[in-house]
Image (tube, rainbow, N blue to C red; front, top):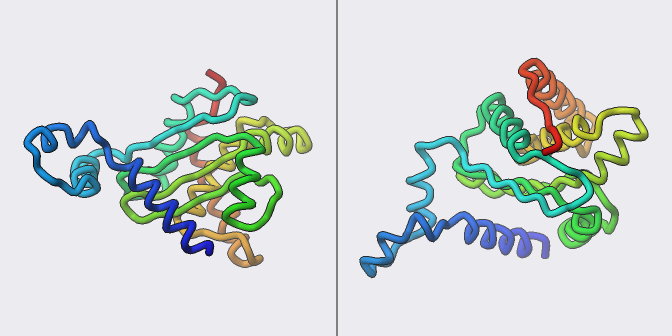
Length: 191
């Protein structure tokens, strides 16, 4: 059942990935085209397209700071892709996704849906989780949220944290990423 849902998710992501604007000339000529191919050809020579969707209202975020952080992270990790999407969602939304796709009806910090090497995938992050955890650790919620973004991108690249060995490897890479972002003074900020 989960495989079927993820295939549907891929179809939805691919549909979002196809840009009608890029295909305007071809449709005017009444030609049938493969929109995915057109999009891949256009974006493959450019920096990855980073889609940012802020679907929550409790945590103010600057899109510019998010984009800079993601671009820096993609460069540091040598990620080669045409596009990826990042969604900031409420606790209610992340809990619903967690229940639907992972059969766990509890809130979580982030959920990823890896797609393929062209469309890296979708990353859902819950700022409310960052606010709660950061307060308990006396940390900045913006720094905690940045860690969740790093964590999610590592999941999209295949890192896992299920067993102790893979968790150690993932934590080590998270630290390297966070150190790199800190060294460059890349951080999330309010608008």
